[in-house]
Picture 1 (cartoon, rainbow, N blue to C red):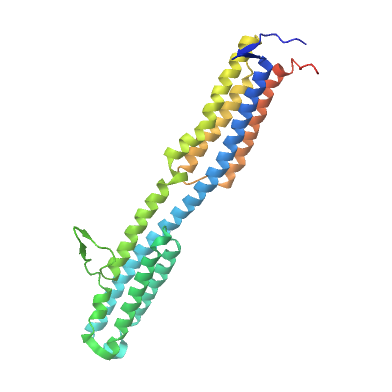
Picture 2: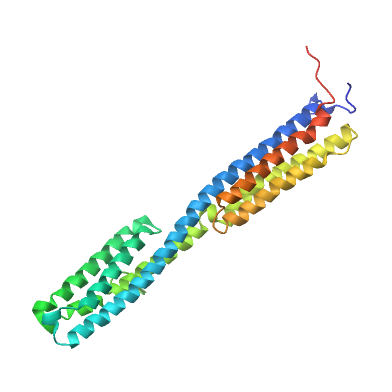
Length: 293
């Protein structure tokens, strides 16, 4: 069967419209495959970063609770000193329980640490807490004169480094507050870095759709001009499905990542888009077969 159309001329050599359609079809299928690949990679990476940010949020809450327990421990120690019976009861059971809570929360917060390079800060505060407990227990032998235990627990003012306060130079409560500040800064960076950053996601994920749109326009031009036929609606549907997956991915990954249920929907949509893109070219390509040489 002869082709109802003219030969396309590109440069010095003439390119048959069928060859152009084959190339356009291959390009569209490649863009659908690239969209699927980017979706899987972005969904996986953004999910990991969202989980890390969630763990950091929990660590921040634990550090805030640890500050409250440390403050209560300070009041319990003050009450034990005022009883003037510290030689018998020591810092008291309340102080021991509260400092144990601080240690537990501090250990849990270290596991959700947003920046592993800050591990030394957690170790420092753990050592500061141990020193507080040891100094408090010395009241049994030294009595009220051992006020360093109380001073070690109180949130002393931090030292100034130039115009700014130097972190981790105050008491235990202040050090816990410094840790919380560091974690808040780190979690902000987590939410704005790489795969959760919309300024990276949107250009990256919309690039295949933009190329696919250009290919669809080119295919419509070739089919309408050289075959005198209307383009298949499947071209528009394939483009629409691919674009919907892209937009959904950008929105979901920008707000915490896509879960497995969403992936189970998006990937079949891309498979359908690829199938429609293939079938849209089939009637025109089937009109011609190159003769065997």
